[in-house]
Image 1: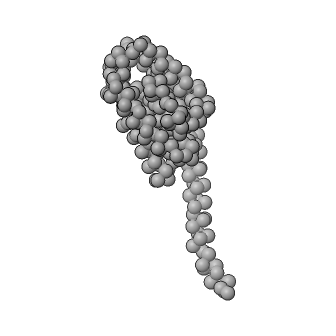
Image 2: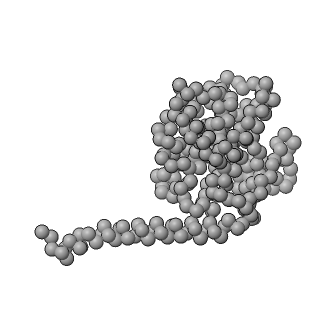
Image 3: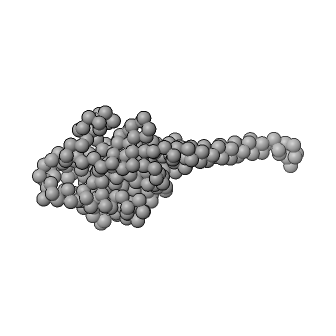
Length: 250
């Protein structure tokens, strides 16, 4: 038998570790609550185009965080709104979306989504703070910006060239392998699902996703489509994109 005093000494590190973990978790929850309560009073402006998958991703991130004090301004690319001086001063790359928060401006949907979670999130569930979980989400976001979204560009041609269609199918092949769990970066819904979901649902308009070949992608997109933020934001924007595609390529 272990003497009672000795048993207490043996258990002390475990108790101490549990205590510190509880304190850390409580402090983090209080931090997010206080930060959310303060920052949601600040007005935001999001420049967007509904047909744009990245713009939809930024809009869905704001909706997922229940940010209500935000102004949405449409940017008509066909009329060159993105090339006007007042816009290029905010975003020299003249892309959409662009987010303005006070005197701070940021563009690229992935940067916008992660910024919104970090600055306005009630917790870190959409963009986890734990290093390994965050790294996985970041990898999926880079996959979207480096592989998924570039594959849908057509450069103004009257038809999608065969090379680009093959790039889309290759992107599907990768994505199918990633989706081994309910969501793209694990068991929890994150900004990676928002960004990749907006892009993939748009790619489906160009190269339809065959359920027999890509069952994981099909099931994942269905889960996304059932969410209110996808129904309210992504679905209408995707329909607008479909109309533009028919107009451009016939």
